[in-house]
Length: 373
Ligand SMILES: Cc1cc2nc3c(=O)[nH]c(=O)nc-3n(C[C@H](O)[C@H](O)[C@H](O)COP(=O)(O)OP(=O)(O)OC[C@H]3O[C@@H](n4cnc5c(N)ncnc54)[C@H](O)[C@@H]3O)c2cc1C
Image (cartoon, rainbow, N blue to C red):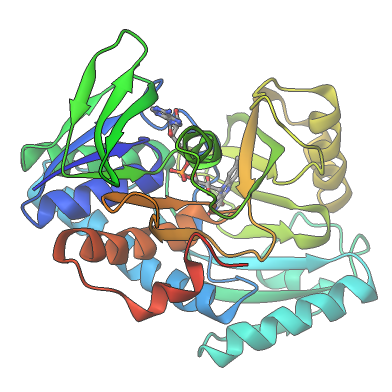
């Protein structure tokens, strides 16, 4: 069986490596370079702090799969840094009492899946986890201990490395522009220069741009909203800051990476991004800096080295889009990962690979099908 995967982000590379492990002949095509989309602009935290019980389950599963990937890369692939990750506490900060009530509701979902959640005062956060935080800057916080922070590049490259060991191939700078179709099937993917690539199954893992592919095929799948996101990183400092900090009400996240830089992001600027703009902007920088300095006043003196823009694919019900097309029997969609592609994508990709390779339906994925209302 030959499968052509469109997109080399965390989702495309994860599905491809899982398929290659099952003996499937896999080819990835990307319009740009490996991980070009949201993936290489991500903080790549595997977070169990999801809003929906189904997503929490998938996040817990993903953390275990990520650890297994790390082990395989070190032991089987001569990739000594693995996915360059570690388990870490996750501090979700509430600036106001109202933010705290919302967070507490989410934490009931986390607890229902067996996650240990600590409800802590600013003083306790300062004493136990974040000595540099201004304890007068926030109302309360909730802390969990099951997250795993990884580094996006070794994660994606590691997947590709394992896939190549099984004969899989990656084609960069090959945008799929069109398709040859007939008899309710996709026959070939067509590139700009007219080059055609055939396969038994085609997988759409194009992140936010997947909607253009569905549109080209006139396939009425669930719509997504593409938003502007972005981040920055600082110069490197000694690694002292293990936790991930999220301020849900500001769509904000910060951590220190194992490369020692501080990296901070905002997810949803509330701005539509119909042209997939990835320009950095002063507005984005100001928004990240404002929250950072409010929490950690001394960070005002840190030098920001690099800033970037990004786009994300949101669904209105907050669930991803995963499953077979109704229009083309050999077309499979896997995108719409909101702001949690690393957190749940690893588990979803593993389950999707079973559906694609073995032809079985995974009951757990039923709520994520592409044509749901
Ligand atoms: C600033 C930021 C911080 C984030 N932090 C986290 C985090 O801490 N934890 C977490 O879980 N998630 C996080 N995310 C979200 C996560 O990064 C995404 O959900 C995830 O990367 C989506 O992966 P993907 O493979 O679906 O899409 P993408 O990474 O966007 O990949 C899609 C790929 O498809 C290619 N493509 C598209 N159309 C075509 C075509 N026609 N032909 C060929 N190739 C095509 C693109 O070039 C691209 O490389 C963050 C995202 C951002 C932007």
